[in-house]
Each structure stands twice: as structure tokens, then as C-alpha cells.
Image (cartoon, rainbow, N blue to C red; front, side, top):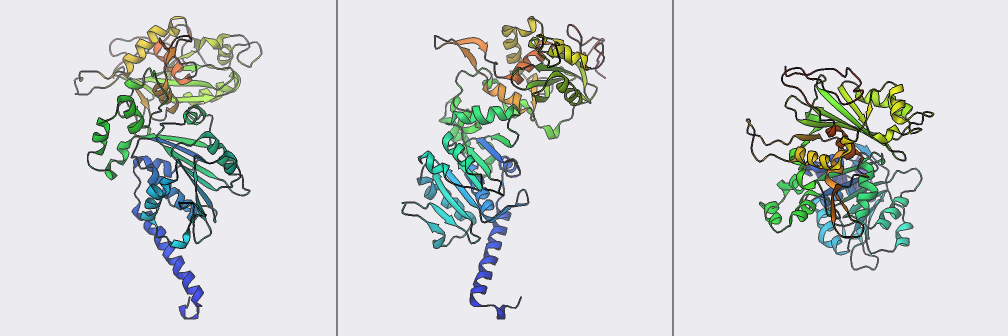
Length: 482
């Protein structure tokens, strides 16, 4: 290209294009996402929801996503998107535009005065880009009808929004030949609906185009003032620390197990873990009639430590469930499969008059029903609390390891443990000594696994099996420390 042959207008346009390219390159190279941000930025799901502590870098991530959508290129997924794009940023109040978003935007871009538009408002309500994209600011106080009429390509919710705004803007992603995406970020101090309508259904595998993330303030420690987390923690109650520093939900009073479960201690990163195929596992299946059946696999290692290895959820009849389940079990030494006794009911298998359990057995799954003692609430509560408790004294290796650990991919079980509450009396504001697992299917499956009392024998040969028929393999298999 010969610059001497270009008109003044073409030269100015070329200069602007070169500046924009340089700015994008600078942004990509200089923004270094923390460990929590990386998992979100690289996800390609349509709806991503982040529950995190204060100061975890949520807004910085939201700004980067908004700029990438306006540019039409995502440097983390290496994807190009359609431009011009309308990017909506939803804030809880207008002051956050000047106080939070504009300072963060200006860290990464140089804006000209003519790019900012107020439209008669006391704050900037729209930012335009050279490629025709626009970034518009919306607020929780808006009327529902005003949100319903908008068409959007990308939306960032900075802090949990009212449900009507989320629903309205999901409807706003209806433009033909586009695929709108949504990012919800915030500390879950409010918006209970996000837990009940997004997070919990997602953990059950019901929202396949969603992905939820949870991380604490600690992931962003390198970008915070020295001692900030420790100082901030001092002024918070135990419950506030869970919410503001770890991203726990605020509406869960009377929690039964959350105080015993610590992600930094109880979780095993899936990418750093391998289970030996010869070690024993037990499986429990929680049967449901109107929702997916849930299965949980619990392994027993040579130290008799219990590891929740994997989980599955599938809404299907017993004949449909059986082949999927058997494939899911491949490569594991299954010594016992216990099924909720609800599966003993006639006609429950979707296989003629057969029960769910009888149909599974017909199709090659050697399983048994739970017995009365295995469904005891009193013994179950004692077992789960003992398994989760961190010992006060260290072992011979200097470690204080709980007996039960969970592989990080068991998101349904993790959610159930963290959110299960004690049952309440209907007429009095009192808690019963009984965990409410009526909607905690993965936790119910764990209950049956623990009740089977699995052991890895370390001395003389000992049979590992429950009452009745046992696992997919030899029910009389024995295990000794090698």
C-alpha cells in the first residue's frame, strides 16, 4: 500500500485501524487472568455464572469480556464473533459507571470524548466503537418492559440481577443469525433465584448450555493490597466470611454440613488424580420418578479413605439407563451397587410390570435395594459428619486428612454438601435433627454408599459386599494391601 496515493480520509482511517489493533494487542498481552478468571474466560458455554468472594477480580474480567465482544474477537477462546455487536452491561446502580466501570475500561483502552454518550442522563449510558459496536449500561431499577424491548449480542451482569432483568435480556438474544452469550458475576449476597433456578439445576445436569464457577477472594490475592484478605476477614462473622470471601450463598441458614466442608482440604483436583483400576468402588443409585436418576461412585483406598470419584445423572427408563450406566462403570472394580428401595416398586422401571431394580438386573446390572438400616437418618448424620471432620491430631505423616474426599468434577455432590440444611418444624421456628435431603439426590446417593460400610482390607482376606447381590463383577472379591 502506497501512503502517498491515499486521501487524507483514508490515511486517518488507516491510522485509527492501526491504533485499534495496537490497543487490542496491548490489552491481550498485559491482562493476566488469575486462576479463577482463566476457567471462566476459556469456557464456551452460552451462559456462564460466577459466584465468588469480594475482590476476586470479577469486574476486571467482565470488562475484558465486554471489550472482546465489542471487538469481535475473543483472545482466550480464539474465536471471532459478529460485529457490530450490542454489548449490555447490567449494574445495580448508575454510580458504578463512573466509579467502577469507566476507570477499569480506561486501563485497557484510550477513548475519545465523542465515543461517550449520555442521552440526557447524568451518567454515560452508551459507548460507541469504531467498528459500529456499542456498549450500553442498564440498571436494576429499570422497568421490566424497557428491558424486554432490547436486542443484545452479549450481556455482562456485574452483581446478581433481579430475575426479571435476566429473563428479559435472555429474550433479547433473539436476533436472527446471532448467538447471544451471557456472563453473570457477583458475590451471592442476594438473588436467591440464581441458586434455585440456575446453580442447583446446573449441578444436576439439567442446564447443558450453562457453566457455573465458584472461587474465593484468595485467587486474586496477587492483585490486592498486602494483608487485605486477613484484615477484611477480621471484621466478618463466620457466615459473612463464607459469603464475602468464598462465594457461598447468603440465604442458607441452618446449614448442616457446610461448616465441616472446606474446598481447599476436601477437594481433589481431577486433573491431578488417577484411581487404580484394581481398587474397590461401591455405587449408589438414587431413583426418581419425575426427574433424572442419579448415581455416585465411592472408592476405598488402601488407607480406608473414601473418595467420591464420579457422578452421573440421567432421566431414562431402566432399559435405557442400564447400558449407559454399565459404560460409566467400565474400568472400575465395582463390588457393590445399592439402589434406593423406591426402585423396588412395581412398574417403576418403564419395562412392563418390572420394578426399576428388577429391570436393571434383567439387563445385566447386579444390584440390590437399600435395606431399612441403610436408610436410618440418625446413623447417616453421624457417619457423614465423622467422615467430613478434619482430625484434631496429625497422623504419622504429619497430615490432618478427613476420611472423605471428593474429586472436583463431582459438582452435584459438592453443591449438595455445601447447601444441605436441617429440616424445620412446620409450626415452630426450630430445627429438627434431620438433614433435608429431599432435593439433594447426590447426597442421598452418598448416604447409601456410606451405609454399605465399604472397606479395603489390609490384613487377612475379607469379603467386601453388602446384603443380597453385589456389584457388576465378582461379589466375593477380596482385597489386601500389596
